[in-house]
Length: 291
Ligand SMILES: Nc1ncnc2c1ncn2[C@@H]1O[C@H](COP(=O)(O)OP(=O)(O)O)[C@@H](O)[C@H]1O
Ligand SMILES: [Mg+2]
Image 1 (cartoon, helix red, strand yellow):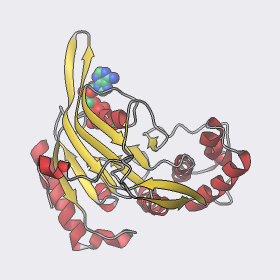
Image 2 (spheres, helix red, strand yellow; image 1 turned 90 degrees about the vertical axis):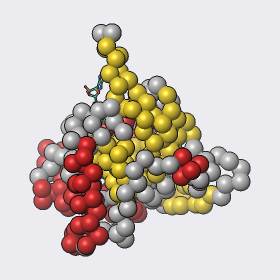
Image 3 (cartoon, helix red, strand yellow; image 1 turned 180 degrees about the vertical axis):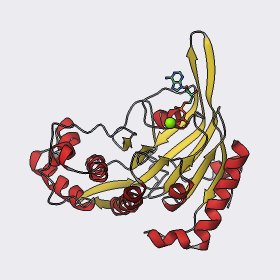
């Protein structure tokens, strides 16, 4: 289904924001840790606008973006180069201020980076002088997590991404795909509920990327995390998402949202499902109108 220009009624009927006393909450378990979960949207961005001002010139980058993600939902953004996708993710991550609108993660306004949000940008930012385990432990060290707890949690995360046995390897001794898994395990150490990914797998070769796509989805499914991923691949966007948002040329607007009604976990076979083919065609059709 394509939603062009979501009506305001739809927004008004969104679930109650986290933090309201009447809201129900459940417990989930991540890596053996019980985590309080709110029932409201994980991400709730409304009418976001952003301009850059440089040398007296003003450049409108985000025209008016509204986007909501439910707990456990996987989504992708696809759109022309330079339209404002990275800017949008940076705003959501609390790394860039916005001009008007509202962004909430787990019901809390985003004004600076929040612990519930993990992000992985194109450069993995792994530390080459540290081994696999030491890289994964970094976020725990930064927040001063108890050493024993950090070590237990790291073991679970390493197992989730399939790196058990490689803990002591140095980064130069492992492949690009394995480094990607290290980055993924490190992100899971933070208990992030929402993962923001900016073209995370674009530097990998096709075969490695196909494997990582599935591994990544499985890990997020197990961890109960939601993600929003920017990709240039229609195939990857549809395979990995419950919903694909298509953006216009700059200044960015969401010009279509395609639901991918395929069950999770997904596999390589998913791509031959007629629903996959339909959704991919629909995304392509909307993209063609934007370029
Ligand atoms: N810090 C900045 N200052 C000024 N202009 C910027 C800045 N960051 C990005 N831009 C401009 O905003 C536009 C959108 O960039 P970006 O969000 O990186 O696009 P995308 O990720 O969709 O390719 C581009 O024209 C880019 O030059
Ligand atoms: Mg970008």
